[in-house]
Image 1 (cartoon, rainbow, N blue to C red):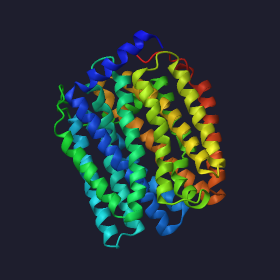
Image 2: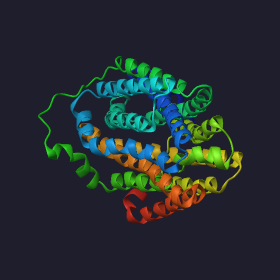
Image 3: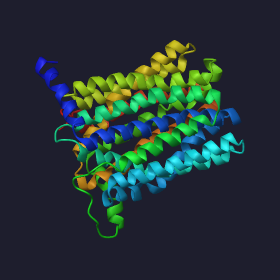
Length: 411
């Protein structure tokens, strides 16, 4: 990297944070991500403690995905029709209310597994509307030409929350299972308040009632753009097969023989690698061969998953998870930047909704697939097969989507 590139990196970050609405967005992303990561540890550990069932762990992902599958296209249209920051604000207020419900039920000892699944489903519905609006909001808050840097910076606060959230969640769960839910409610509530201070220069204007063509316009746009289709479908199938994180409670308790604190460390490990990588990408954005870099990152993710699956030593397991997080961050920054840069603003909500559907299919259905496979074959074979499948998908996609493989610059 040349000295001139190094010299321009820091002023770019300062220019971003000189935009008040971007600074608020950064704080909102941190608060909401912190709450979500606490939820991942608290809900997963509580369900496994109540049932000792790998299948029920997988059902957590399925319960989050089902409302996304049903609401995605309405959510995308809402993000393009209404003020995006207001949509996000309402969703996070709902998530805060659900956290209060979980806290009360846990403290009073009447909360059951079906009620937890019901709460997770409501959270999934809120996130179905929240994520497309949030992703479509970011490009309107940053100066032209700085979207890749802004994506890396906001991803870094997500990863920082991913480190602190699970670690703290695991510790406070060991004190009392209801305390993590109190923290979630506080974080989502603060995030909803902060969103009220965002000022968007070009608010979304009212439009005619939606037609079916409008609702599914995002699907048509993605289908007609091979690079975007290849990007989000790669994420779908690679992460669908490599969803080892759903089995972390099993690894923590039964394979690595640790407790809630160990689960928190394992949950945080991918975020450590991702945070370090996002810091590098924020200072030195990828400039050439970005398509190939994304495929290389996915392949590395798959191999690291295999190492994690084979490991019975917590240090090696944590190292493998760190590498998985670093590789995933490279893929995330390239994918999000490419999709946003190649999508017109009036379509970003609907295209973002399609992208979010694919992401959730990979994450939540990946968790269900991992839980189901682990119930049939055991946790270790499930993770190893998933990692090998991720590598195979990346190699196949390089041949199926040469347009994506040959993307050079993000512009």
